[in-house]
Image (tube, rainbow over all chains, first blue to last red; front, side):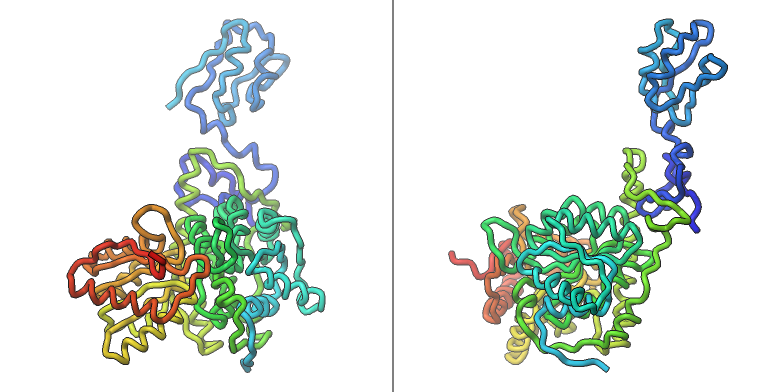
Length: 101
Length: 393
């Protein structure tokens, strides 16, 4: 039985190590697929300016802003594609986009 | 024990498919390939195979269904010609990039327009960059033998790519020839069981097929696919070796006919090679050192082996049964000339467009080409390298 091989589909992987035809074996593996690798900019969160209005959470198309104890948590950079919608949604100016290596 | 039978090329391919007994055969009719699914449908109706035969509404659907069936884990194939192949365009690339070993029985016919139902290679040549393996036949026996070998090549674990088994529309597909068939059980044993490692209908390990590849992966995916192509020559030769032990009939990447000591050579694909053999024989009887290279495997292109086989000739004519509309020749011409150039060859080469839309090719036509090759050798110059054969001026 084949095991989940989605980790082979990373942006650092050589062509020699890709799965055949880029097929993905295993079920429910989207969480393991790190789409956060795709972005060139990432949102940065300034907790001091945040009013905890939570407007950023529902607008994130990749569900990368978790709510923990009624407060927004840290960005999930493994899956954030850097779209910047949260920056536009934030009325307090607590989120800015920064370039990544 | 082999048995002799008189069959058309289409019927011969259908018989091979009956013997293979594939799992899924979706099909849509188009001249001149229609008889392949037609004969096969009678095998299904008679209970001679247990194939799932799906009548679909288009070639777009027949290839899509073959892709789905192959991804599901079955041995799948379809058949088509000309515009039917053109209508499969999108799916051809998907079948190849998903590394699905589908077989396509392609009966070569001119693409419209002008609309025409007869033989040329414009349909297959248009698909030459789709990532499919392409193997061509000169006659009905080869069409049958190539089909028996198809799945072995396509399913080879280092290859895993779809394959087109091509024959010339009407010239071989409808002409009846005496051919030798293998026993059903021998074909069955030769082709073997299909056991893919991953497949959609595997309850133990679900599978995603054909995921989106963003820019970060696309080139790596293409390079990985190209690696499969690199093993095709090995798979073709291995399969041919086993086939020769079974049938006594030898196949390679191409056939070199009286080429060993030839001064003048023609390179061609398909049924007209049979005519060219007669021309070569007649010229040889007159003391002319004529030879033929008949290509069997066109994709991938066995460039090094071809350049090696042609290294001693003085002049060569590459015969294209398809236009490329680039103002300097056809697709086979471009491939062979690139192969010669990369091998450092100094042979004088010209490229003929011939036989389009079923235009007859005669022994005299090929002798005309050899006469031109002899003239080129004596002139020491190839002159116009992009020529038409048998055209009314």
